[in-house]
Amino acid sequence: MKVLVTGGEGFIGRYIHRQLNLDGHDTATLDIVGSKGRNHYVTDATRYPDLKRVLELSEPDVLVHLAALTGSNGKGGGAESVKQTYDYLRVNVNAALNVYEACRRLDIARVLGMGSFSPYGHAPCPINEETPFHPNNPYGSSKAFVEEIAKLYSDIYGIKTVMFRPPLVSGEGQKEMNVLREFVSAALNDKPIVILGDGKHIREFIHPIDVATAFSLGLNHLRTMSATYDVFVLGNKPISVIDLANLVVKKVGKGSIEFREANTQAFDQYSDHRKIVSVLGWSPRISVEEIVSRVISDAISSQQISPLPNPME
Image (cartoon, rainbow, N blue to C red; front, side, top):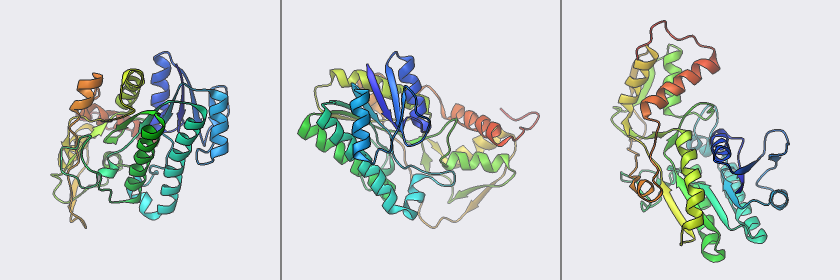
């Protein structure tokens, strides 16, 4: 099957591209960065004529849409989007609109999309596919708008779409910051791990390898599903923030924890992902403990930080 991955040079895109190639698909990528090659198109997805031209040239059977503004080296998408509201809405909404309009005009009838937990906001847990959206930052709103566009084009034009909503994705090669990477960086650099509140609030992490596996299964689901639109929440074993901090300290072999008063009330965010287990046979293979180990190893490698001689396992 011919597949084109927008945002294919990004953190998650590289994992998905690799998995689809391993599964035997003819996979190409489209991204705003990188060097042009036989299987990579350098194109800004917010420029409709350029995007449409690439789809005409590549003639994919399925389009995997990942291209979006997420976060940065300093902050995650939610915090960054508060400072750059216009950019996040313009890029994320326009890219999705361009993808679906180009697919409509070129008769590309199947799309796999990347959702997020961001639109849920402070939703009651566990979160599932039916949990209403209540975004509390521009990034969350942009991802909710993307899903509305996908649903609209699926309903009106019959473009079959499967949307995946993962919790916090963390692993090797990541640039965007999140609570896990902040904790690891603090411990490795002999700074206190700062927890806002009492640390009892719950979070959920998933490795990009497991996300990529879901997308691979999604390709098969697109061929057999009767509906034009389907959504799957991804998940893993939840962990409290204080337990996460203690796990980081244990695996790094050093570190201290400091509690600070939070400006806003901390909230839980974890999933009920039984639907994807039941329908697609998917389950996470990489535990939160292994994710922490992988993030620590990646941070040591990238920062040239030497671990302690006998770190606690």
